[in-house]
Image (cartoon, rainbow, N blue to C red; front, side, top):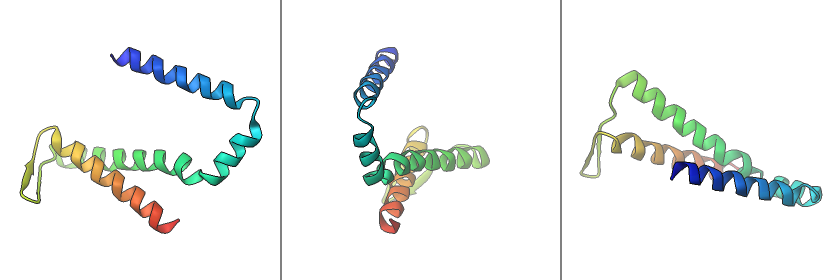
Length: 96
C-alpha cells in the first residue's frame, strides 16, 4: 500500500513537472498569486511536526484532557499535531 502510494505521488509529480516545463508564465503566475499556499502550508506542517516532536522528547508520552475527552497513547500526538497545524494556518491567514 505504501509503495503504491509513493509511486502514485511520484507519477503525479512527474506529470505536473512535464505539464509546466513548457509553460513558465503559468507557473510563475500561480507561484506569485498563491505563494501562501505553496510555501506557507508546508512550513506550517514542519512547524507543527517540530513542536509535537519537541514536546514528546522533552516530556515523554503526550497525554491530555480537553472538552471531556482524555487522550493518551497514539491519539495524543495526532490530535496535538492537528491543533498545532490549524493554529499555524489560522495565524498565517490572519496575518497575511
